[in-house]
Length: 234
Image (cartoon, rainbow, N blue to C red):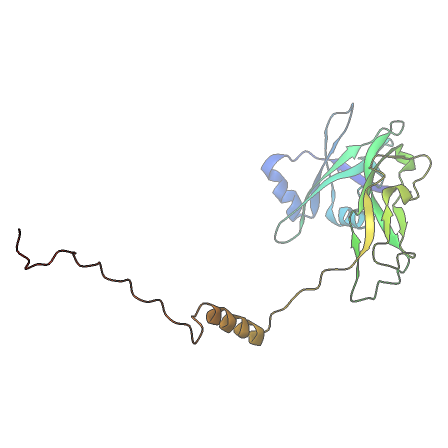
């Protein structure tokens, strides 16, 4: 993988005062890592933006400080931007020990043309876009290729175990995890206004007593007493 470079200078402005740096086209930087003290640095914003356009999360960067010849091997840890303007606010770098294996997430690169790519009845459903690996910093691949040329029929799939992983890299994902599959979405039933009106009428008819049906007779009145009102007692 290509190693990029960034020149920085020691930052003496800290806290809320860094707003003045940003107004002058300078972005605050922090460098941290195992076995080193955190470094407060700064660099020209255009240079950092140029670097960010080229560097992914797995790119190694040779970071120099002031006029010191020794360089720090770092990777981008986090990038903070303004939520509205998108302007760069802060960048953190993580220093890497070149002799120690590290865990990183490497993006998948989907390549080739699937016969179903232009179909309107099926889609290529991507389940994951990156995988975790462990390796030495110099062995980090730029990406992991995924050839989709043979995905032609519904149900055709590619799993993690089928990916071409370099021999000097240890895969940390479940080999049975799905990467991509040819999928046919369920047909969506769209109810037209006419169909909706017909359904409403049918429901109303079902709730009404059908023609010709005899209504239930009213409940009979209670029976009169059996004794004659005017009969003499014996």
